[in-house]
Length: 446
Image 1 (spheres, helix red, strand yellow):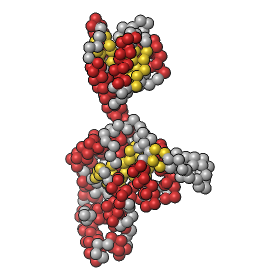
Image 2 (tube, helix red, strand yellow):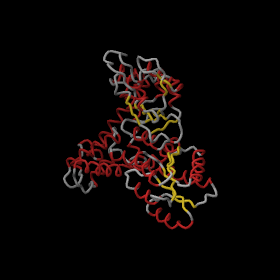
Image 3 (spheres, one colour):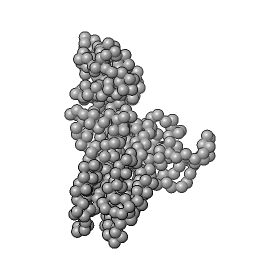
Image 4 (cartoon, helix red, strand yellow):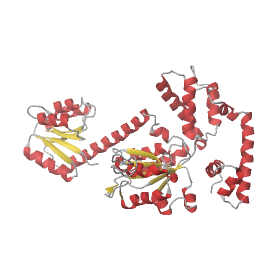
């Protein structure tokens, strides 16, 4: 990581030497000749790191450090000290300074190494804070997003791909946490300090989607009274998350392909090429390979997006985490509504573990929110929806039989029409999308 460093040193020759060492290592270096001028710079500008002499006239490095630590987001400090003041430098480390080096500096690489460690630690801290902010905004922390045995391979994939520039395509049913995984990839990436800009391709009318993606110039169409930035420009230096990419119209897919290939685009109604300095993460609940075969999704775009596929399992395959998620959501909604509950009774938890959760984690979250609102001292079975409470009882057996009948009817319809899903759906009186969901639910995709 390359950082913005303030170098505070009263010895001009030594200061110039240190500046050369740090700039040759790729860092952006500003300099101050004493503690007072260093303090003014810290007050007026943002620095990742301060490399400061400990003993200086006017204001010592230690005073500079203590003043800076009062800020909400203080820079890290590395001290340069003579042998006689090592004890003071050690004391400063106990108060939060990162490290110190003794003067004279015999090995310039030692400074580069300690600076690199400080900046890497700073980046990890920022990643952690970003994840905590996500949690405060209603997003579970990373350890909960990837909880359970089924998610351990996914967690490894996410950490492997996060530091690269590869496009990622996340597959999963609605409500499985595709956006949470995308945000985690972004936060763990070198672009983690930039913007994360989500766009649900299914939620925007087709005639407005191009403008949402690429922006438009004034007068580009009726109602375009002023120029507007699109998501690709808003995500500059960061990540754009294209949810439900399978819903994107074919004509617009060609324009997205150009962005991925050439890293440029134009606003609607404009001719100026704009550089797309973004990472693309896409997600879908469709089988895109089948969409390609049916000519509803461009094959070349599919291969561009599918560089690094990540498949999220549904909640019914992650039943071991239902108690953890339930506890997390109870705590969260108790904070939001100002309640104090003891937790959840065993009967209610058994019902939740027996349920199939067709809406996945999003459905679980909604169920817990409702239960917290209704509960008095403990979340009980009576606070859960009727369909969920009966999931493990005699009614469940009846539902299972109905499911088997439904599965057999689907299989028969597909066999009758030679595997043509459109014709099978028409015969069954359901939409093709509903049939697609049923095929996934019954494990008939392959």
